[in-house]
Image (cartoon, rainbow, N blue to C red; front, side):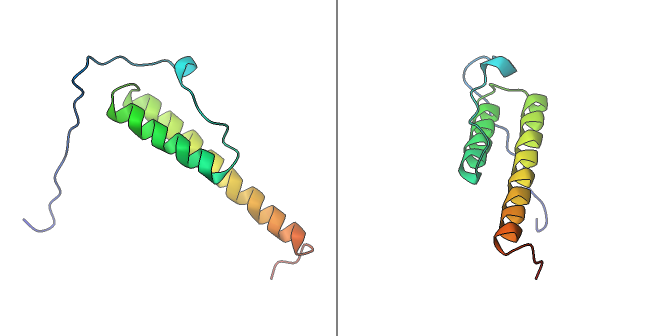
Length: 87
């Protein structure tokens, strides 16, 4: 039917084993590439049941915050390079 969406469930063949935050290997979130790598890792960990939905949500929130901070830093550097004008 038009307008309807399908829901897809992904099941792992292996038993679920959540990893702790201490076990997560995250890149330093200092540039857009690192943030993209982090996002890819969270999606992969979620799809393979290595993190819970709650843990993935917390990680995604941090990635979103890092992305916003990166944009803010770039904007500040751009203004500084233009001599502080906001044109």
